[in-house]
Length: 159
Image (tube, rainbow, N blue to C red):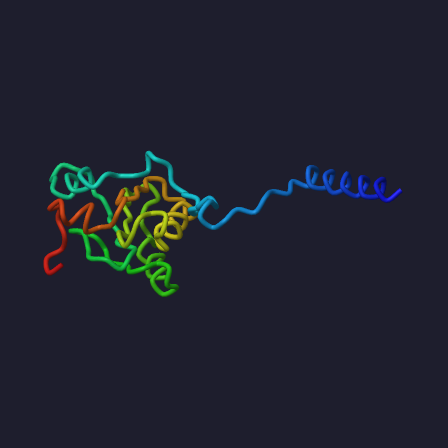
């Protein structure tokens, strides 16, 4: 009788475990790392050498560059500051006011790799939410120093 009860209980536990999607706990070292989802596509990235060439060219169309981080300014960039701060996000919104929706806009932060950056996702999402259609994100896989300044690309005087 006892054996029958134990078998029934074991069967119910097995049934619950397989039908409710229970999974084994993983140690912190084996847990998958999750990075925030990216609101941009690969074709919305602009490489540093491409932006540097556009800045140095007299033939390229007007590009509006926004520094939405706390790093130094690329030549010609409008300094907004870290948009993860409410007052800087409000300044960014004001800077965008009145720009045509097809304006060629490049944003960058450069504080750290994309997966850790607190500024690029909110700024990019704001631009798309406001209906801007020609948005590029400067592809800085490490940071502004490594991917821009150390390569000799132009920064504002005094930086």
